Image (cartoon, rainbow, N blue to C red; front, side, top):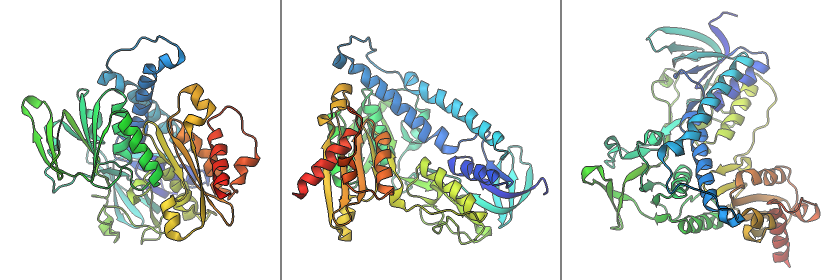
Length: 467
């Protein structure tokens, strides 16, 4: 095989491209990833998953220092957290992740091509390096895994250029810690940052044009999370759109006016209004691939575009835009394109983790979805303030909700709010995917005391409601 020919060329350096290339290499195929930046990891490592979760952990640690008296400790604590202190852990973790990613590519014999990848036709990709030099590579298959970027509404006159208004990628260029922050958009990213900043003492206003925050979640979970946010000091403005951004004198911040006539003054603003696929200048038009209005690439159940040997996965295809799902999709794509058996996973079988404080994690349909489908279902609920381990640790905020089919008895969904939600969901995921009955939780022994005990309590509550 020619040095310029590959079995798989993946455009992008994030989780989806990495896992596809590694999987292909493990199957004896020659794979390469094309990354425009000199470092690997994509938005996941540098703007999204890794840095935001690092900020979450720092915010959690800072909050827990304030709770030290709960354990009878007199722990010294600074009155305020500086921006440098908040960002310190994130920068350390990013650097480590870059090293780990590059080592994985080397260990798995994946070639890394640094430059901008442009599709010429279904079997050729041109790579342009930083010096403008161009080289064409031949390939059997192409994977587009270029990720996404924050959506900047063009018709709302949002003055991003003023240095006090950010999108989620630009947040890490923040020059000083604000005392007040408006977050516009109460989806996953907006809600995560709202709680991160609130727990380090920033006054946060959270705006959303919908009737509730995180509107795609189970209504009980969305409502409980809103209540928890408000208790932590976040001011929630639902059904509210910003109609005017007025800059205050001496760079003191912005005065925001909503469609309801509300006027709020804040030092800085974070716009979190969704994301668009990174598809510009990829040469999609040369092969007849047409993205949708959110610049996302349309694929079938096997992540193939309308061109059978060109695949797309990860954030560039849209929902659920989670690093964990992108990794799965990348490995799946590699197996499918080379004829290896692979079983697609239904979207409702993806676990969703939201790294707010406390965290949210779900798997399976919401109660509202089951109602719409006409399913005869049962509900069980446990509050963490009734769980012994939570009382010991102080993690008493939140709930665990189980949904099950009354006829088959199988567990259909689990929805959790807890500081440990993204870890706790693993048991629910196993039970849902293995189609186990609700009685699994009541008939088996779990370590005591543990946070897992909430499953048993919720299951007992579900069975009690049936009587």
